[in-house]
Image 1: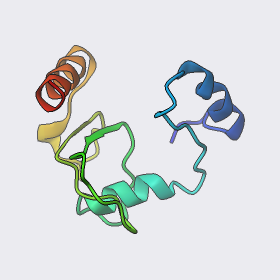
Image 2: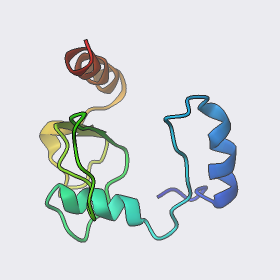
Image 3: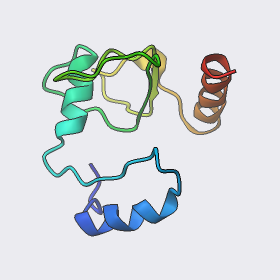
Length: 103
């Protein structure tokens, strides 16, 4: 979604995350972002800078399931602006959600 998004940049970003549950990949066709936006009811858009939380028993099919909670940093009008958080507000909302969902 950014000018510097390349396969090489994605490979380098892998080094930032040492957790085996984290996956980093390059998606030049934006397939993942399109699937997430479609699961949120916005077919034809691309979700990025989204933070999505799913129930443990969620079943992933052709499309991702609808998340239990989500927030984003996308100012585009299609994205629910009530779920837009930036900077310190985003950090606080992410921490609050994590404490709520994973006590």
